[in-house]
Amino acid sequence: MCAVVLMLPDVSATRWTVGGNQGWSTNVNYTVWAKDKHFYNGDWLFFVYDRNQMNVLEVNETNYESCNSDHPLHNWTTGAGRDVVPLNVTRKYYFLSGKGFCYSGMKIAINVENPPPPPSASPIKESNDSPSSNYRGQIVVPAVFAIAAVWDSFLRLYW
Image (tube, rainbow, N blue to C red; front, side):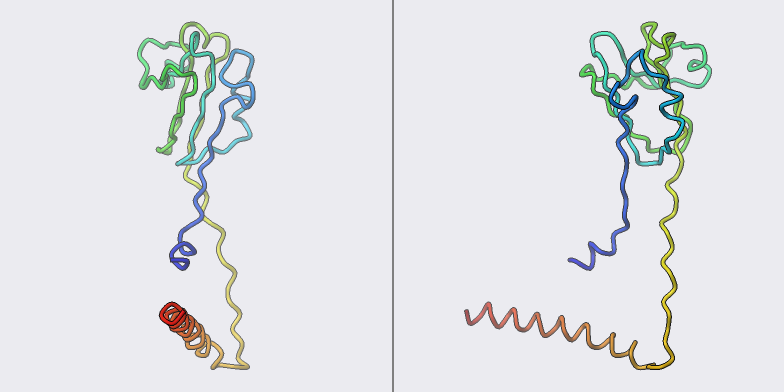
């Protein structure tokens, strides 16, 4: 089981709280907030806001530019003021708050990319001094595990 866990790739999605500690409000310049961030496929946007006044709408670019919330692509508002949006497609996303708040700056456009490839492993240096060392590793390691398994079985039966 440990070997299977070690073979899994290191995948880590980021949950971005939109606006940082100020959340989804009229007091944040979201263009500046998003400028130095990289959004990857698999990340999440977390919108925190006053549920009685604001909402989270996904719109197309034209409606984003004109702050038109009449025909959203998706209404992410759940009513709790804590909405999570999965970024599971590599494309440009456009979000705004309707009810006139978009005109106060409550809109954000982000570009979602595929994650960068993992760093490549450095090549293994092979030594010409001992050609049998690689063969020894293929025998010794499994033998140690086999002996440990037999010993464990022995202890379970007789103790």
